[in-house]
Image (cartoon, rainbow, N blue to C red):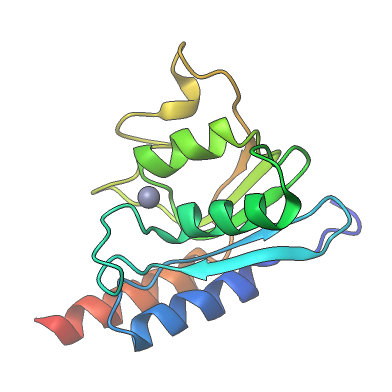
Length: 150
Ligand SMILES: [Zn+2]
């Protein structure tokens, strides 16, 4: 891809910030069609006592609020971990153009495994999906985080 700029480093920064807050280290950024980052977020489920406060959902909510639209047509989402089925459904509802994610999530992922939300016949919009972007950095963050909690 010529002219491709990865925003995964920004997403990894959000994941590190989440770990520092004691949250599972997952980070996400939403990029507008002109290349601006319109939202960045990390997990906040503990802080907000909200099981839906995943990085992706927080980023989607913030980007929709910023753009004044329930749809993020032409926007790209970078997230450090394979989205869960809940987030994958929201990505489809938001009409996100491309999804770039890092590590695969055999336990809770819903894109390449498990529910495979975007391959489901009820899925009205599937983004282009690119996986394995910055996967090693994302995996090592998660491993370190869970090793410290044991
Ligand atoms: Zn999720």
